[in-house]
Length: 183
Image (cartoon, rainbow, N blue to C red; front, side):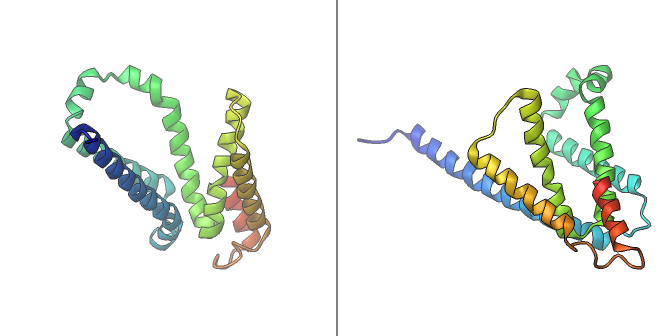
């Protein structure tokens, strides 16, 4: 029984996609783990948060436009784009996203990287909670177990002395709670 060239090609595409998924998952994991460390190392406390956030967003737009132009979808999108439709569709989410990025930058400065990373993951818990409340979408037993472990880890970090090191002459408890509540 011979396999058709089409099914062989499909198997190769599936394997290539699987490798890409693993690569991008690894890169995303590295980015999440290193972001607080990089931000603390290279962004001084005197840097204005809104300037930092705006610079990052401009860089994202430049890269997005570059890749869209390379892919050939930029011209098609430009012909269909209107300012009013864009503001209606993305105005509120963009404002919330900008506020979140500003608060994340403040948290980077006031929490150690381990505490920040764990607390940053609590957004998964709240997403699941609001999906249940608003959309009535239930979680599986494994998902509930993972969410409970996530919350337990975040609570243990927040009551421990995770951020009591390296905050200069500032009261460590004050710095920790400032970063926690702005997070």
